[in-house]
Figure 1 (cartoon, rainbow, N blue to C red):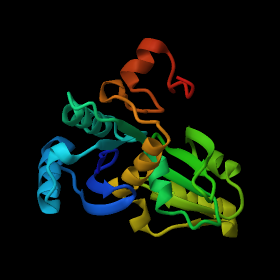
Figure 2: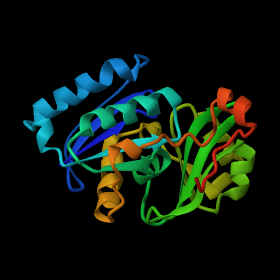
Figure 3: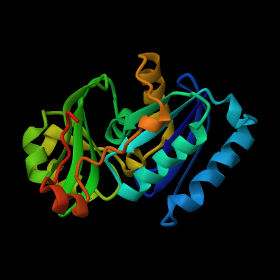
Figure 4: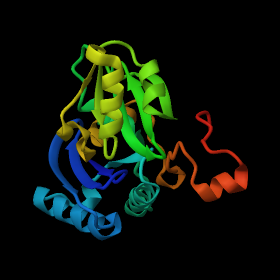
Length: 232
């Protein structure tokens, strides 16, 4: 059993999977802090599925980019749940999980999340889900220049206007998917986590760190660098 968590956006989502098969999922979007919703949601999900926490063999967590606070809460929760159990954790890129639900097996997919300041977090994936371009912070105009014809755009939280601007520049070369595709779901995190774990890419919970892509302002002032090193 894999327990997957998604807290990178306003959506709090938890899912339980057996391999890549969904056992149970709970997803809710509202403005309340993840700190109030996440643990009760996990308890309720496990109870509904009739599964004890001790039966969970591994975890998957959305690692970013996204809300700095949301990412920290999700990762801290996984660290607490996995503590002392020697159970592996898969750190799943948030944009890859968003793209998974938009894939049609024929077209590349660009996943977007609001990065504020008129920019978006964006990443491009092949029809089979393989990454074609690393996560980046871009203006809609810069993103449009990088996308191949026929790209499917999945607009995550707060990025709807940016996706529309990209589509307007590309015309018929791009297609913006309906809003439900942009809701971050723990099930997608769990599927990608299961694949990562099968490849032996699980890590001890203590080694988990959020993938912010853009540094917090305090970190920018301290280091002088606005973006994280993708190779780090």
